[in-house]
Image 1 (tube, rainbow, N blue to C red):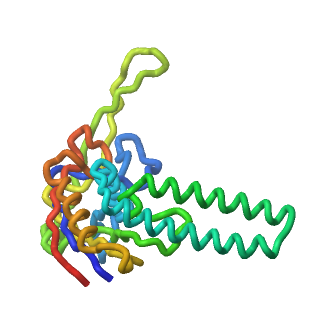
Image 2 (cartoon, helix red, strand yellow):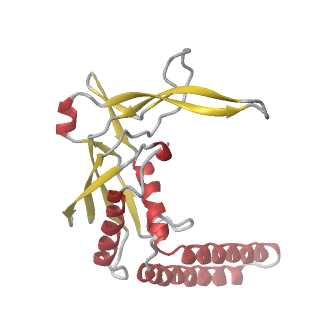
Amino acid sequence: MSKIKFKIKTESNLMIGGNEGSFEIGGIDQQAVVRRVGDKELPYIPGSSFKGALRKVVRDYPCEKIRIMYKQHLNEGLEKHQRYIEKKQQELTGRDQSELEKEIKKFEKIVKAHIELGAECLFGLEGFNRSPRLLFSDLHLDERSIEKGSYFSIDAKNSIKDEQGKKLEANPRVYKVARKDLVFEGEINFQYFNQDFDETLIRAYIEQQLKQFNDGQYRLGNSKSRGYGKISIEIERCDS
């Protein structure tokens, strides 16, 4: 399975929070996502969080060649589904046949929606369990960052609340976030791609979009407008 290995360096504090819970007054409102390694709690970046951030970049920078690849793939899937329906229709009558007609219309709608998405199809297709897709690993601290021994920052921020037209009041909140200058390692795997897909082109496209994070326009996690989530990405080529 082909893959892209890469590293993320936090250029500012990073807020990817876990579930909010009940805390005492003056305690932490939201904590960073952590995993326990021995006696240490280490921050990590869930693959789903980074996938969502990269998907936004891909949405902003469409690729017509990738859209055409998926259009062909989806149309082939639709033709197979139509042949299946036609075979079933010969065996059924009345209400069951009507249900099959509804099924193919629903499937056609799904195919059309995906074709319009273009390169976003790389993140998975509804109704196609074995569609060519990218799989994202969780990102964990590299050894050098672990050795530093300082992973979190406790940040206090004010949120402004307007209680039904009453005067504005500051509502101080405290967050435990991943610190600046940490390095996380992860990988993107290519799954179910066949000869109809130009993996070299797709790899170059994804690497280009990963680099979009390096100028700070795109960020990761929560509270980006408050300065959180600035990252830089270093790509390590890995073909297998």
